[in-house]
Length: 139
Image (cartoon, rainbow, N blue to C red; front, side, top):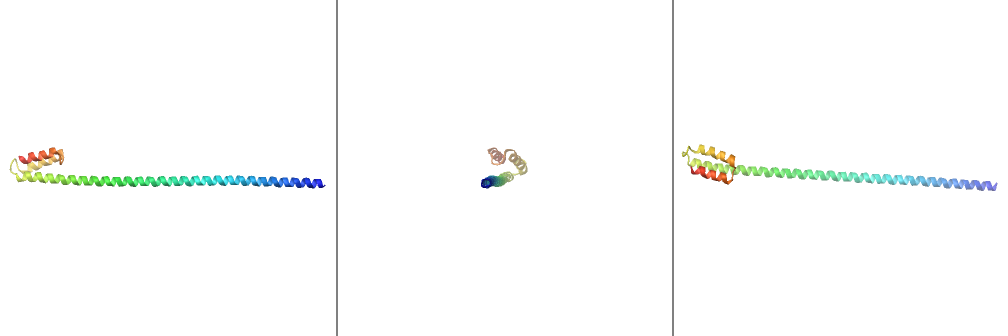
């Protein structure tokens, strides 16, 4: 009988040990699962951060491009204004030259028409225009 009691105790102890081992194994599995979940969460957070950084960089690039476009537009407008001012300066100079000498060679109106065509064809400020201006005023 004592032997049977000892055997039962041994079996009970062994069962308890196995139960502990099972609990320990289950704990290990749970811990591994928790670690995997934490790693996945960290990876997701890193991916989100990277996406946010990329979006911020894209926004910055877009803003820079917009600023550059605005600057280019402003420069173009300034150049156009300068060209127009120069055009009017040359036209006025030529008109004055031709009108002051008006009556010769058909008067200032003819000179103005020629001046306008010279300006359109050759461009203001070019040497060809200036020589055209001088020759027109000499007539």
